[in-house]
Amino acid sequence: MNQNVWTRFDVAARNLSPFVFTLFLVIVAMVPFKVPGLSAIIPSLGLISVYFWVIHRPDLMPAWVVFLVGLIQDLLSGGQLGVGTMVLLLVWLAIAAQRRFFSTGTFMLIWAVFVLVAAGAQVLIWSFNCLIVGALLDARPLLFQYLTTVAMYPCIAWLFVQVQRGFVR
Amino acid sequence: MKKAAGPMSHIAAPVRAWAQRFAFLFLVIAAFALMLLGKADTLLVERIRAVATDAMAPILEVVSRPVDTVGDIVGEAQDLADLRADNADLRRENERLRNWQAVAQQLEAENAALRELSRLTAEPGMRFVTARVIGDPGGAFVRSVLVNAGTGDGLAKGQAAMTSDGLAGRVAEVGLRSARVLLLTDINSRVPVIVGDARDRAILAGDNTNQPKLLYLTPSSDVRPGDQVVTSGHGGVFPPGLPVGVVAQSGDLAVRVQPYVDWAHMEYVRMVDYELPGILLPATIATPRAVELPQGTQR
Image 1: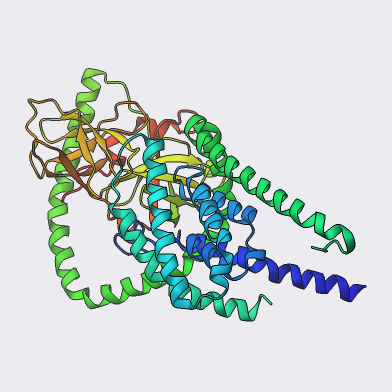
Image 2 (image 1 turned 90 degrees about the horizontal axis):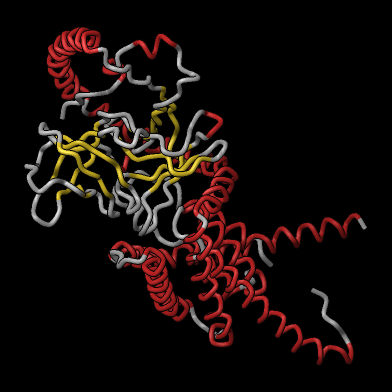
């Protein structure tokens, strides 16, 4: 009985790790790094994380977890509420609809698709922000942010592969 | 999840698929509702944000410590290398500042005498709350930082936030132990200022670039690059005379201001508590404002 409780606890903790790591990355992206101009183009680590886990462990990154991550990110970042949440949900939908395609994908293929998905996400973020503010916003910082996000993907993915081997079973 | 076994499973699977689709739709609608809420009820959203940042502040504080430490070590190594040159510079500056001190003392005495003579209403005193920058949420459309002080430390919405260089922004949201400072460069930032020796009034408006614009300058005003920009105190929230920056470019299209603040190296900010008649001691009110103000910062 006692053994059973601990096993369950262990399984729950392991299953929680994708969410915890995603949240951790969202927070890391907010640390003041004191590098000139970095904060405007800091990679969207939350997007990378959600993309990775939805592809590799969709059971541990259901839509409601994605919603929660987006909500926390929106609340902390001070940006328009709901925009990040909506975009992450749409990314989730896009990948969930093509799950079979990814199940056989190599790393390069998954990265290539991420290049497209991230582009779509940034365009959506820009559009929603423009709609809410009611003005055409400068899209250049978003473009740079897109580039850093795409470039950062392999590093985070490598990290998560280790996490997947170590924590998640 | 335990799977329904037996003859029921072929019914349960489609039902579950429908339930999942419905749940997703519900989440999308919820996200859309959040967007509307963010647009409609800013006060409520502000409160929710304050609670969220309060909850995350301890984590951010811990995570940002090592970064600060590394930055400090690099800074100290650089300082050590520049020690001799700095020393010579400082000696020279000290000499220059001594002159300024004499001038300031003279002006202060003169100021006090003139105030007495004209019976000018005493300016309210100021109190400073210093806080550490624990978060720089970044992103393409927001310029703000999170600090580790809140209402518990005497912070209130609207207070001016300064670094040792000059005005950085204003407090936009306050939680119990954390607050968000909206920087001058944010697209939503508007600060009433006075420009140059002619003391032209204008509004300093951010547009997410590093150099905010001056709005509503009178056409006759003659603003030139190098003119000092200070807060005007109009609106009553910011004290007048806080150093903001210098005019960087002036043209027909836009007059832009280069703020004094070094955005990349904001480690501590001071919040200026301007109107606190209940807490201030009579002695602080009696002191002329000029003494406490970091005015006349020479650039």
